[in-house]
Amino acid sequence: MLLVRSMLTTLATLCCAAGCDRTRVARSNEQLLSEAWADCASSKFAESAVAFQQVVQQSQKPDAQAMRLLGEYGLATLEALGDQPEPEKAKLLFQQIVKEAPKSDEAAWSQLASIRIQQRLEGTDTAASRQRLAQGYREIIGSWPDTPTADEAFVHLQALLLISPSDDEARHVASDISTYLGQGKTRFAPALCNLRGIAYSSCHDSRQALDNSIASLDRQEHDPINPAPADSARLYGIGAQAQFDVGDFATARKFYGRLLKEYPTDQRVFTVKLLLKNMDKVEADLAKSPDMASAGEGP
Image (cartoon, rainbow, N blue to C red; front, side, top):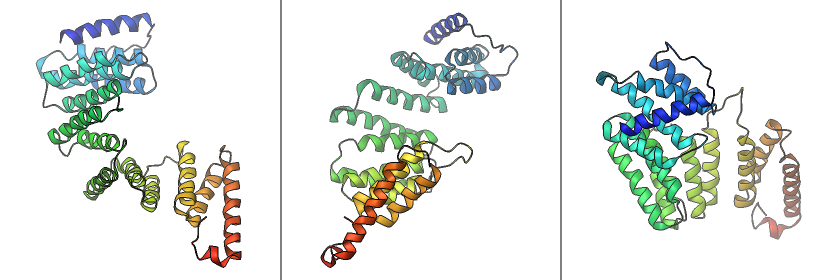
């Protein structure tokens, strides 16, 4: 608790110096937490810190521990992801939450956050570091089964295992993801389908890689009012996969066509039009040459 109190004092000083002018007096802890996370999402870190700090200060009684943990978790998150991140301080704050309430949801998320910070600090360049990090993710999955924390740890674990995998390791990742998705878990389905596609690509199964790239896009939630700009890149990537890796010109045309229709001003439009003309030419050449046609549809 000494570390938390020290951090609260420091954050309060910084926030006053920053000239925070929002009045948060007479707000409930629930309101403060909502405002704090909204401010954090908008990169208003100083204002977010004030709100989290106030939650902690208003939750010092023993029966208010759950609310205090939420405030402390918010402060630790700001240290990890704020405008001036201090990962070592963040790790200490997360570890303190685990020590204070080891069975709480905040402890689970704090353990995951600590491993994520460790991955940033340590890197993943060596097999030894990847093994240590993988063990950390597996411990979370084992300690917090069937929880959102375990589900997120599973995603991070699979991504870690796909750094320089052997063919057998890549197939194992693909199998584990299939088992996971087969249990009806859908929260991270788009990310996991994408990772499974990377796994299949690593072991040279281009068709499965393409199918999973498409599945990832199809299972992504879309906001029609604010479509993700990154979708244009994904449409282009799937088209290129279909054209060059699989030789499936029909699928390539489908996704190139979607890009042209949905993102007519995208910088890739000119390239896509050239690729479509190239496929037309390849198919025309194949039609003229029986020997080439017998070799297959693609280039």
